[in-house]
Image (cartoon, rainbow, N blue to C red; front, side):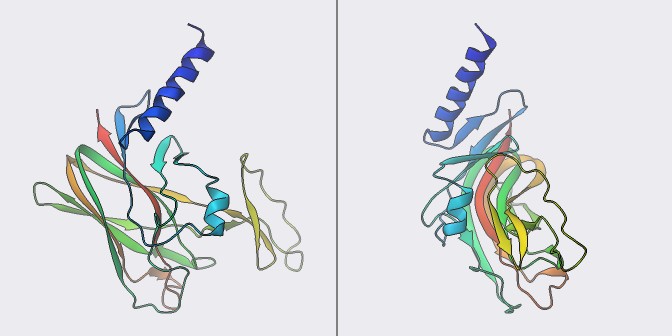
Length: 224
């Protein structure tokens, strides 16, 4: 069997496993499997989201697959950053997964640039033994500034970006759409629930802006 045929076959098997009832996927060469969660979100993909996710059902980032949900499949605690710093929001992602060792979150926020916000919320993971583990949410803005304006220190060339990168402009700057993957690890156990909580922001600038929590995908890592 040629190496090219073998790789194609592995990718085909992986694609089928991602679409089947479920949400179960195995990544060849690692000691974990993935359980992709369906999110009952409160927000549609907006125009920017569509650019980032061009009609994909499974989005792979860093080798981790995330199930995307299309319409009404994104948890957005606010549509954009605001100055209402005392708002709160909770969303449950129902998930019962044995042998869970951690969770990957695909998300973003708004309003942290140029602030140095260290937390925009947290996640509460509950287990069948009654314990709860809390993980911090620290996402980057949904865009990354790539250059300076010529009026400041001169134009700085944008860094080379991967194929498929989507650019935009933000206040005269070249910017690249950006999503963040964070991982929370915990002792192996049966995960019974995931709760997304938008708490008051922490860090520099958090007293003047309330950055939202945007969750696009939740994938549980399970020990084989």
